[in-house]
Length: 275
Image 1: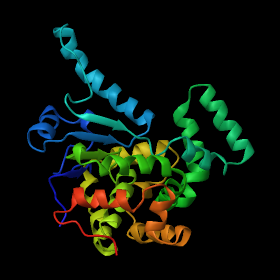
Image 2: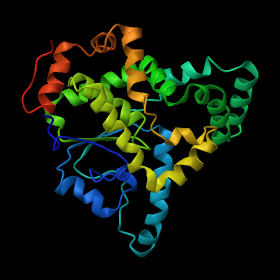
Image 3: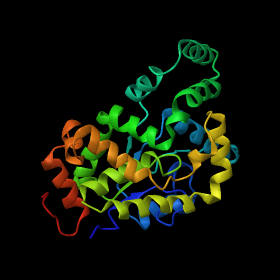
């Protein structure tokens, strides 16, 4: 049985945590220390997403700063170790850019040079990300972001880092993929993993309107705000077909049997060896 007091995923609207700690209420941020005893936070967002949230928080803090020059605004919670691991890093970006048509790539580069980042991302989104859907996005992350996923699992293999809280922006795609890999390591049945993944859709409803606006600006359809029922099965099928098995994938990215066993020992009340 997995220990619910050692690992938390940042599902937006979940009672398990505040979603994105840097934009959470002071009460939720305090609860990470006082209630959940969090020692480590793994932030899976892109640098652009992090900057956006920091900007919003800084605006909220401005009124306080004007009244108290001695106040110090910090987005990071004191006494917590932070790891910022962008699953959509350079290798992932290269994978997507290679699929773009020449004219589209030229347009993207021009927009980026002009500082019109959102419009540039929408060009990439419409042409490359949208056709593959959320399953395709997960497949690209699996194939391109092995270094980043290995780093995350290394952090999770260190007992001294627990309790750990990990999150992304919506709490279902990058966070969902990491949760899927962890549950596969723990030998949890796929149908149980699918139920856990689908639970995120209801938890995201309070912010669905905002998320849809963000997705449309990125050139993506409203479907990207959903949790496809086939997501877990299709992602697992890709891993099995491309790498022979889940253990074959873990071995490929450098997450060997010993490291997987350490993760099991950290997350299970009674560790079970791989069969």
